[in-house]
Length: 148
Image (cartoon, rainbow, N blue to C red; front, side, top):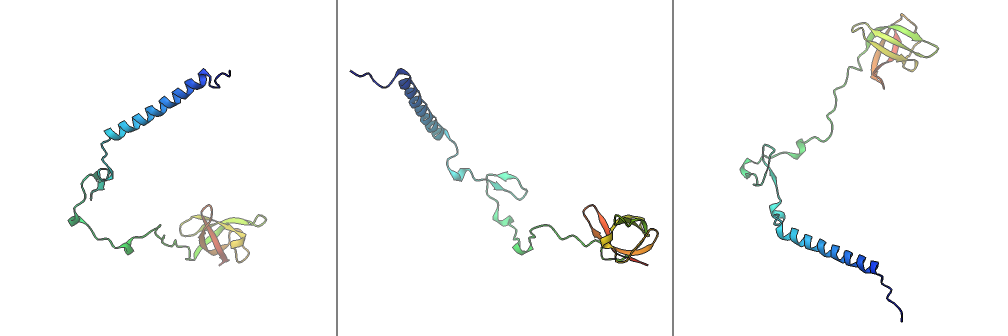
């Protein structure tokens, strides 16, 4: 006569699984019975004209008409920097072997980086020049540099 394939441990584990499943179903039934939500209509919240959350709907008389065409999406365009204006300055430093230097503007005494690619004529230190500004990676750069 063959003995049962089920051992004590297998029966015990199966009883524990069954009890756990029944406890879970019982807790779910209790939560449903005790819930005070009452459905989606009780979960709706409204925002009043001051931005506060309330449970009462807003008064339709206070409703404002908004033209959808007047809403701008994105970032406003920045005003153009005076990059197109021609400025005057003096070459403070220029290394011809490395191809860069600095120009000091006469009006504001600001120094601007200049690269050999932005130079239209050959320049050297202490030359008076005219130039325009463009925004570079690290700040404003002098471009279209010409001798005066």
